[in-house]
Figure 1 (spheres, one colour):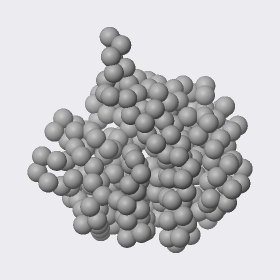
Figure 2: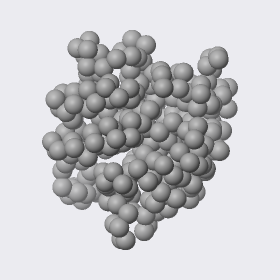
Figure 3: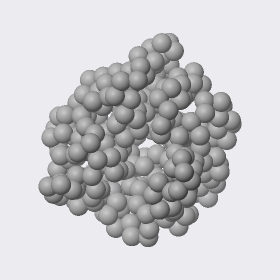
Length: 292
C-alpha cells in the first residue's frame, strides 16, 4: 500500500497524574476503551496508554498492576481491535520491574522509551517551586534494559526526547547496537525545563535525527496557541502528530476539551488543511515498521 502523504495520528489518552476528579481523563477499562473508540473514530491509529490505580479515590495515581493493565488492554482491544497500542514505561528510580513485567506479559506493538534524563522543574510566579524538583532519570543503563526487553518481544520503541542532546543520543544508541530497525522519535516540547514549544526549533531538531528516523511532536504545557502552532509546523515539515488529554486540555479555539475524540478531530482538521491524509492503522504499521 502507498503511505505517501499519510500522517500517523496518536492519541495520548490519560497521562500520568492528571486528576480525574478535576478533569475528564479516562481511568477504568471501560473509560479507556470508550476514549480509544472516540479517538479512533476521529482519525487516530495509535493510542498511548498510561494506567491508573482502580481503587476508589486512587484514579489519579499510576499503577503497574498486571491485572489492571491487562483489563485495560483487553477492553481497548475488544472495542477497537485495529488500534495500535503504545504502552508507557516511564518510572523514576531503578526499580523497573513494573513496566518491564508489563512489556513481557502483554507485548504491545509499541512502547515508549524515555531516551535521556531531565530535571523536571516548574517555577511559580513568585520564584518558588511548583513541586519539589524531580530528576526524571533515564541513564544509558536504564534505557538499555528497556530496549533489551523490547527487542526480545518485537516491540517497537518510541524514543521520547525532552531535549536536543537526547535526540542526538538516539543516534549513538543505534550505532552501539542497542536497538534494531529505523528509530521512531518524539520531540517532547513544552515541558518548562525541556525543549520550548517553539515551532522554529522543529527544523533544527530534524537536522539532528538519525538516518531513516520517523518522528513526531508531542506538544504539551500551557499556551494553547503555541501547542496548536507546533502541530501545524510539524505537519508542514513532514512529521507525525500526537494529541490527547495527556498533552493538552484545550481546543484550538480556546474551549476546554471534554473528550480525547474532540482533540483528535481538531488535529485531523489541521492535517487536512496542510494537504495530507491520516494513516489507517494498517498504513501506520507499515510506516512505523511494526512487523507483527
